Amino acid sequence: MSSSVNSTALWRSVLVRDLRIAARRRSDALNPLLFLLMVVTLFPLGVGPGPDILARIAPGIIWVAALLATLLGLDRLFKDDYNDGSLEQLCLLSQPLAFTLTAKVAAHWLLSGLPLVILSPVLALLLNLPLDAWWALALTLLLGTPALSALGAIGAALTLQLQRGGTLISLILLPLFIPLLIFATSAVENAGMGLAVHGQLAILAAISVLTVTLAPLAMAAAVRMSMN
Amino acid sequence: MWRWLHPYAKPEATYRLVDRLLPWFAALTIISLAVGMIWGLAFAPADYQQGDSYRIIYIHVPSAIFSMGAYFGMAVMGAIALIWQIKTAEWSIPAIAPVGAAMTAIALFTGAIWGKPMWGTWWVWDARLTSELILLFLYVGVMALYYAFDDQRTGAKAAAILAMVGVVNLPIIHYSVEWWNTLHQGATITKFERPSIATSMLWPLLISLLGFMLLTATLVMMRFKNELLRHELHRPWAQKVLGTAQEAD
Image 1 (cartoon, rainbow over the protein chains, first blue to last red):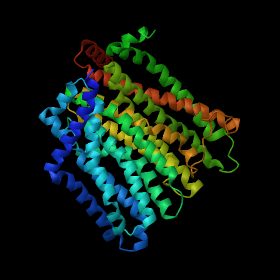
Image 2 (cartoon, rainbow over the protein chains, first blue to last red):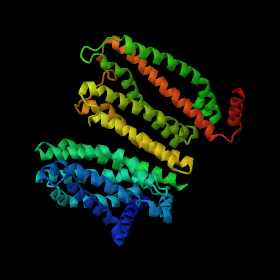
Image 3 (cartoon, one colour):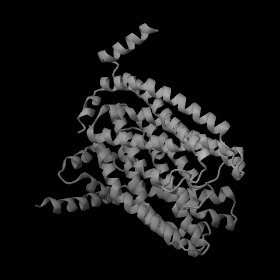
Image 4 (cartoon, chains in turn orange, purple):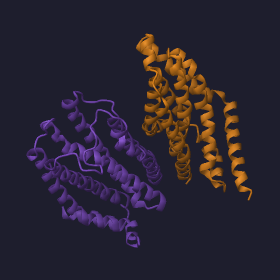
């Protein structure tokens, strides 16, 4: 059967299409990152520029800013495809919808999660985070952001029919993000004190693997629900 | 095997069943809560370490357990609604969510009251407290999502999916006291070994647990009856129920 070949080809073409759209509308992908930089900039101004305080609260600031930045782009994740009908076409195909949607999640991660990892040395520098802790920060972002994208896609799919779903997305997603935040910041704090971080990193990886495999099922159910 | 359940996909049959069971549940709730509360708060012996202030356990533990129990029930109803497309299961979600949220709020509030004399603070960012707070947020999210849609069925399905996704939080809450060795004391009765509580304190606690379970069920059933009537207002049976109720007044 050619359908098994087709579903991976379809996956790749959806990914490439989403990346191409993002390349043509750069501001959509860049705005959340600029927002993140600005949020991070606000904290030294708000709590005072003392290097000790900043280094202590840096992991929390960066992760909270990352959560907020992830939320910003989510509204658009399925909306345009829903409005122009191409999402409906994906539903009608014989290829599994859950698998196809992971391509959109992957595109979202490449545009929101990966830039965060790349940006993390700059953020660490801004907030006076020591080098040992920066490695842990980059690793937590690398392991944690796929889960953010996957969980976020569930929220985006659930609120697809709503005209102003933005605030509702935040309301339903932030509670689900909290475990990631807890483990990530405790890993960075441990790294800053020279303690082992493998436990927290392993749990973050486990959460990511679990959400990336199971979330597409919820996503597909939510997208189908929005279609009628 | 499950054939006897089939009639209850019909709202009218479900309404009659709930209507018949509700007085029994209400009566048993009053009895068990009265016995559990009076025994626990007035007659159970004082704790050798915590004195009388431990007595709030008779409200705190049952409400915390059934804040999770109600969420689990809601998620099961969500699964039934999504898999078998049963409308009555969809309508039970808005019936359960506010009751569960209230239980969560009671658990957090009594926990804060208990925490003040024992730990010297109303609130700590401890794993179990935080995850219970997340549970409250999840309830709020489910309710917000349910009422956000113009089309009630879409809202119900969206809330069902969210309820099922949020279930992952329940084991986190339950095992948080074991995974993180934190300020919150360990489990007292919900473990497989012998309970680490004296029998004279355990019995009133078990009766309070039963009382809170029945209370949750009773409140959910009362709300569920209203939901059934609200969705079936245009049907003759619902009009008949409401009509006779008005005459009885």
